[in-house]
Image 1 (spheres, rainbow, N blue to C red):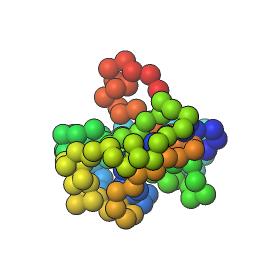
Image 2 (image 1 turned 180 degrees about the vertical axis):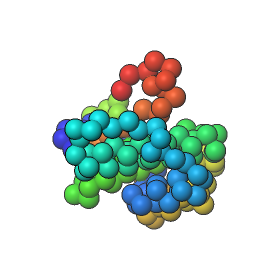
Image 3 (image 1 turned 135 degrees about the horizontal axis):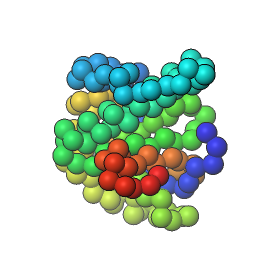
Image 4 (image 1 turned 90 degrees about the vertical axis):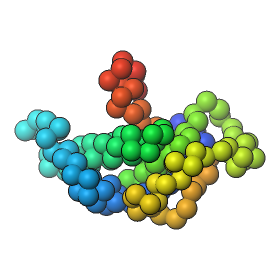
Amino acid sequence: MGDGVTCAIIGYKVPLDSFDKYALNIGLNISQEIKVAGHLSSTVASSLSTLATIEAVAAHLSSTLSTPVILVSVDTEIPDDYMLCCCADTTKAVYDCTEILSTEVAPAFEQIPNLIETKGGLHRIAASQAYVFLPRRWLDEGGHA
């Protein structure tokens, strides 16, 4: 993916196919939202479709739970390693593990594993390379990525 930023992350790892399953279960149709130019390869078009689905699912979960859900891609040896997070702090170069472990998590956010398949429980990590996606509503309100 390239160079990400150092990030303290609190959230759930979500298998890529879980985003598609969730989208189908709630009747989310992303294909209508994506306009892909004819000159793009099918691999690029598929990647755009997948990212749009992942972003839409994160936005839907945030709305459903009435709590912020931040989409983060962690740069690991596993391609497409995405997390749904309640905290994604990119303000420091070095993080205090005690601070990450003591950060409170909203009870509503802890309901995510009841709604979408996750890989294990809640993760609290400091990642050397991560990509934090701004929620769509922030971009719609004039925010910049």
